[in-house]
Image (cartoon, rainbow, N blue to C red; front, side, top):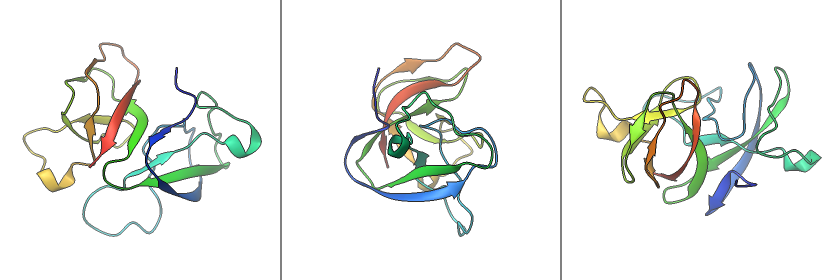
Length: 133
C-alpha cells in the first residue's frame, strides 16, 4: 500500500473546501475552472495534520489538492466496473474516479493514462497508478 498520493513528479498544492466526503486520490473539481477539459487535480492526503491516504475529508473540511503536470504519477481511483490495460486513456467519471475513454470522448479530454492494468469488478472504486496526460 502506498503512503502518498503523489508518486513521481512535482505538483502545485492548493486548497478547496469539501462539498462532500472526499478520499485522497479522488479527482477534485475546483471553483473557477474555465471551459475545456477536466482539471488534473487530485485530493492529497492531509499529511499536514498527520492523516494518511485512507483518511477521508468530511464535508466542510479544507482539502489539500495537488494540481499535477504532464508525466507525473498519481495514485488515483478507477471507477467501479472498469477494466483497463496499462496505457489506457482515462477521463473523469464526474464522481471523483477515472474511467476508460469511450468512443464519444475527444482525445483532448484525456486527463491521464493507466500506469498499470486493473480489472475493477467490484461495485466500488479501486486505487490505480496513473500518469497524468
